[in-house]
Image (cartoon, rainbow, N blue to C red; front, side, top):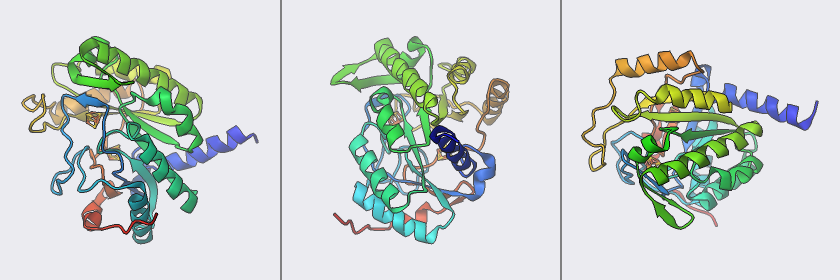
Length: 294
Ligand code: SF4
Ligand code: SF4
């Protein structure tokens, strides 16, 4: 058996115990470590808040942690939640726009617990920049949010992006983001990383375009797509845009299920979520004040 075969088998085993990639993995717990506050993209549906204990949605955390604090918290949670298998970095900004913190957190945890499954969530703008480091760090699962595969449509979704020191808006922003998302995914897929693509459905903007996104992800070799309703957030550009109804989301998932595997059990977790998908334990640990060790 080659090293590549062994790695492939290890990743398959990790996928079986990752609740977001496999419904049968629902008995396993995940933990999001909020070490990534900055973002290099401004989506028109997003407002990031750092102190919002009663709100449950991506981009929200009670506290941003340093890598050392995150490591201390991991040890405490692992002790109390033995079925914890997955550590994710999912904001509250973008995991790759804070790559030093993301990398340091993973290195600390990996040294302590080499068997943990690492999962990153990103908008994908910096995927080609960091793909080889992501692979070397042993990240087995990655989620990229892709809301359009047409720069014109993408241009309506993102207020701006910041890339290599320059701010881009409209279609230019959409074209750069899309190009990086697709090339980054191709590199990761070629190296055996299991890729999930989250798609935020936006009424009148990308809802009829979603099957095309899913077809593109299938062609690249992604493992699963996750079509989600937009959560309207006060203060965002899209705050008054109606979300797709549950029925409309169900229909999209059913139609796209004919193209490739669909996630239907996403909880749209906070950036400091802890627990199984059926049992949110994050409240128990939100008051935790880590004693960082240097
Ligand atoms: Fe918010 Fe994520 Fe969009 Fe950044 S990429 S603006 S954190 S939704
Ligand atoms: Fe899994 Fe969805 Fe929560 Fe991400 S937001 S950890 S995909 S359930």
